Length: 419
Ligand code: PLP
Image 1: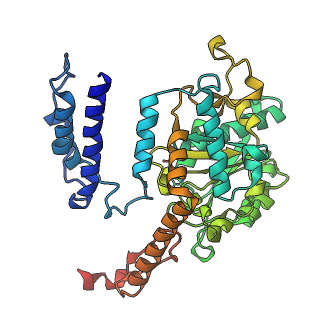
Image 2: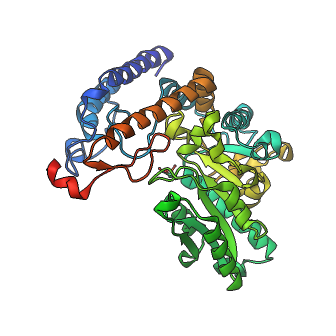
Image 3: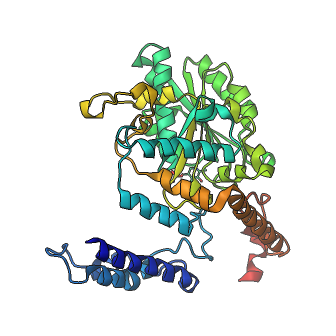
């Protein structure tokens, strides 16, 4: 496309998105389509030659074929899963990054993109009241990945390699043990498995309703001591701030104290509720994070940064780089390597997206106060909804609403009335 045509077609796409949001509450949230419905309506092969007026006809297909078959995550009536909040600014940030299409795997591959990521992760960390030890300004540092699962995988691998180096050999690999609770997101087990931890060495510690489904420091300590006594090697704890089932907040300070002296890497998965730390009145949920090794949260869940954006901060970036750093390709060697961040060494893949641009725009256009207002509005709505549900005898609220999450269910004994 020449510049003029690009502008013309770009406007069509922006108009399309704006129209979609104007009418989004008219769509049924979930599609009623059967498997194969779309494939049946599309050609079997890609066109050999450019279609005439391809964008316009593709947009027509999006409207007529695709939209009837999607779940409308941005619908005001979509309440499944944790939110994937979006904003116009987040979408524009994505468009800008896609338009520039740079690949900042090393500092030299795009100095400004790398430096913007270091700046913006410090900005976000400060806005979330995270301890300085996790930020570049305090000797740690942050990066922007796609998902929390990637953050878990990268940190387990860093912990694993650090531990095996301490133990002077890979023979103890089969003895490494990781810890979580029965409320921890399932992606943790997957990440541990991918990192080579034996499935039998993933300790899932039970929680209970009386303690609000939080991980018990005493139970954790007992598990760690039992493993040590049996000759195994405690490696990694995944604590959660805002569990998926009930948004429970594990007690970070007490958990860190429980494993202190046992050489356990403590990671905090704050995928959803980490965003709440932006409000001073909720920042206590990360109390004790001074002692953790890593902390991650998804701004794409609750901070208006469109998919995908997971911020990961580590206290010792050198541990990540020691495990994930590569030095094999002469083209990628950075003259100033020791003085700069090469983000390829903080993640699994080489190539990476320019996510910092989107998050930077979101922070600039909404401001920290704007994001606080957004989070508080969700918390207020959840409280109002909880009050309505509690006032209805057909329902019970098994745990108090936390953040924007209200858990409720039909009372089995009242169910017949409703039927
Ligand atoms: N951790 C928690 C607490 C979650 O709620 C979720 C998903 O909702 C995840 C991790 C997985 O996140 P991701 O899809 O970014 O890997």
